Amino acid sequence: MTQIEWADFEKVELRVGTVVTAEPNTRARNPAYVLTVDLGEEVGIRTSSAQITAHYTPEELVGRQVLCVCNFEPKRVAGIKSEVLVTGAYDDQGRVVLAGFDHPVPNGTRLL
Image (cartoon, rainbow, N blue to C red; front, side):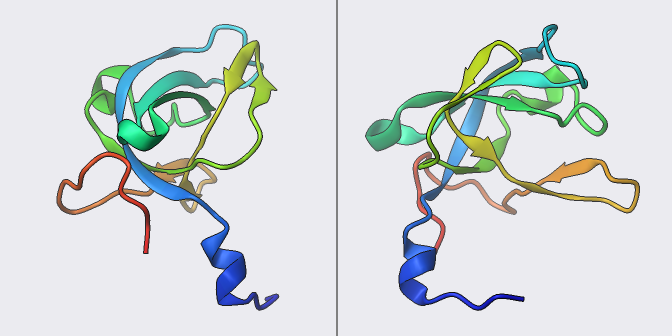
């Protein structure tokens, strides 16, 4: 494992947002959703393409709080402009489980 300095960690904008919309990305090669995420006043609403279809339906995602990397350059993914990376971890079968919170926090809150 490569160690980093605290200053390196501070460069990553990890913020909490609430999924506003979720719909299948029909242009994706692998099953994915197009998400719009409200990241608060400072960041605003951003779009993401996420391969999280194994554990989640669009209906389950709307209203859910997620942790996003907000300061990557936007990237074209399966025909959409993906502006944030929604974070998670792989389960024992290689399916993404979203990072989340036990209690609601304000949109745009930065991870400590």
